[in-house]
Image 1 (cartoon, rainbow, N blue to C red):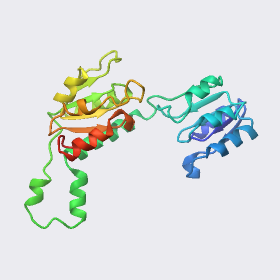
Image 2 (image 1 turned 135 degrees about the vertical axis):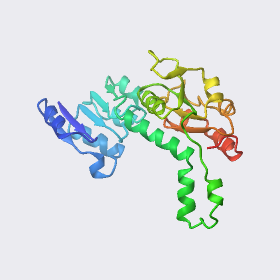
Image 3 (image 1 turned 180 degrees about the vertical axis):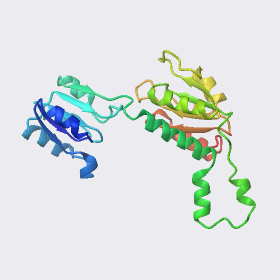
Length: 258
């Protein structure tokens, strides 16, 4: 085995891999740069690499075609859109990903965004840092937020991230409804719903689905129009899941709160 690892990797696991063959470890978090497609192809050929592990780097069609020894690509993230899967399949290269690798971190990030929207934290920070707090009463009214406790959270995609988020939001007193046609079993504290009802009854909607032909533009103008003027949308999925031009229009016209 001749492996090139361009992702962060614990030393103990590098040592384990070295028992199987030669391992070259160059993490992008240390170099602070991504390898260009031409440089990556050149290195794969020169080093006769058969195992490639990436996290942030891209592996395009031309790179795969120019790397005859390559047999395995590991992606240190759930999303696979950084690798040309079709080209790899045609070349007989196995591609694997790592679902749920950072599910807790992403769920906590989503919860942080919910708090930021509910309590208007970014707007309040900007208001204060710009020295605009002159009237002692005005910001108490304009910056008044809402409590998450007692509100309804709609989770679209009840995979590892969605489940973690649902559990945490249950813990702060939120009602959690979810849409996921593939989920089984249903986690405790979660009510399953169809997408139409979820969009219309949720105070907060959080999106956590992978990008596929079925989920691209899943949240289109029709779905966004079902949201209430007081509701908020958080997207921790691929941007293509939401019809962005419709979202911009709805935000500009204050059809949702944020």
